[in-house]
Image (cartoon, rainbow, N blue to C red; front, side, top):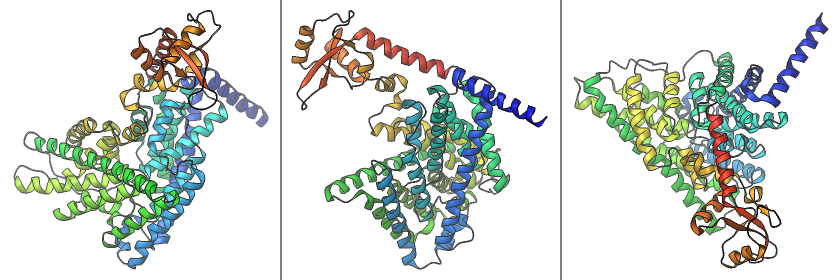
Length: 556
């Protein structure tokens, strides 16, 4: 009897495997695979968090890492100074050894993988980045854990996709499942985890992807709750009643302020990154030393203001419960922005979500203290502004108003102040997206010369090379002779075989011709050999086919 049941189970798994490979993720069997990916990603997120807590507790000698800055204040100043330096040195050595560019992989790389690499990311560099970020967050780095966790989940889905040899659509759905589970397990927020994967990573809300991603998010949440229980990350005091008609303009103004501060945070990170890269190049400093230098700066700040250490849970909680003075909110906000810029710009690792929550809560509380003081009879609690500011600034940084709003609700358990949060979130996101490329992540990708923020019509041509579409010289459809093509080459009108379709389309537009010579480099940059021609109509067909495939996936 047991053997019969075992054979039936094996037969069911074999059918599910066949369905996955042949027909993709539209079948029920795929949901079981999604649940498995969710469980694995959930455990990865849990172990990452527990690893940070254990190492942080050891290094800072604290029993509760949620209140790490209070414990850090009791430590010798030289220990606070040296911890980030030692951590940064170790991070630099790891990244120098296991990544080609010494850069930590994060959410932006996952988004790029979903859009351009069939839902796959770098595995070796990804694992190294996770270890580096764990060390950073444990030794005084001022960043968040969501970025490393999301990329670690993407590494898991990439391994699964390669093992199962899945196509691009299925691989992207597996990626969404892993990301949703990791975010849900990190923050005990299944709804937000689901929407984060769809809104931020996959950047579409296809119906076929919703069910498996939701299942994976629930699986990740169960993993979290088995360890931490059904509790929220932050506890709030009573926020009071929102005076809709009178107080709503204040939350609109808070959204504007939060959007501008979010832009400042994003620009600060890029500024420090550019300055550090320029300094590294001019001084010939080895790249493994760069995170240690960033750690030295962080340690110098933390000696006087240990509030910048780690994800900032304690300071965020103080802001949400109104236990900070106005001048403290300003000082901590400015220092946190500087510390985050140093950490990420110095290539120490970590994410931006948790820091944006802390900065947003501080901005909101500071704004609320002023608002309630000016209009005491028509204002609610200043902590309500802290909650709204937290959501508004985080949504502007992530470019994810829907999932960020829900993350704030699920982190705090307060669903009664949704109106204030939504108003502030909408304004802050609209403001920030007009100044940067929609979000911090898409701005990072844009700085690499990849135009994801502009939509599929902008980045799809870069996914195809000329060699995939060109015709050889002797092809019957190549309606130009070799002599005519060589004449165009002599006029500097040509594309190399490894060039992208984007470069070819731009040349077609500029030269107004129907065929472009395709060349390869033989000896030196000026020695070309003509190998074929690229027809304008073939280029347009390839572009249209890519657009159609993307639209079909997003609307399936």
